[in-house]
Amino acid sequence: MAQSGIPVYADTTALSRLARNLRAAAPAAWRAYKISVRGAAQVALADMQSRASFSERIPQSGKVQVTAGGNVKIVFTAEDAAPIENSGKGFVRHPVHGHMDRWTSKNSHPAFAAPALEAHQDAMVAAIETAITNAVARTLGI
Image 1 (spheres, rainbow, N blue to C red):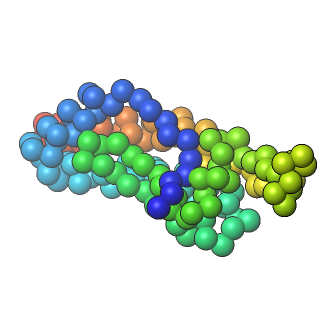
Image 2 (cartoon, rainbow, N blue to C red):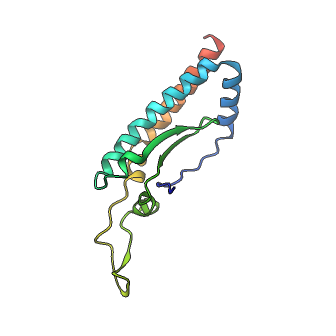
Image 3 (cartoon, rainbow, N blue to C red):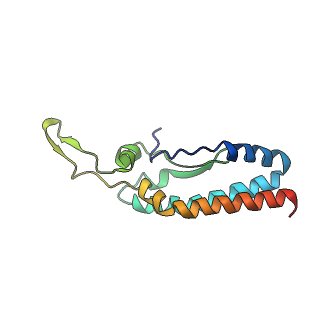
């Protein structure tokens, strides 16, 4: 299955270590962290789905995943999601009916995942920070 969107890479070594420690020390705090982070990502997913309203398949193929390392992924499994997203650029330039001397981008769709992620980036980072703080406080009994 194809995945869409622009992979946003960050050094999450410390987050993975914290997640491992939370899972071991306080499973209830880990579950609370995952629920909170998933909820924050759902807002971005809903925006992505509304921006992909030109398709019947793409919006319903989106889902939020929280990995064992505490990272959040928003994945679209529709086959045409990745080509439409075009690394966040949208508007794929392609030949007209196979004629390599005539190209167009008129029949393409704008990117949907990258603009939504950019619009919700600050809120998602704040939600993750709050979830981490709450999970650690819950683990320590503060």
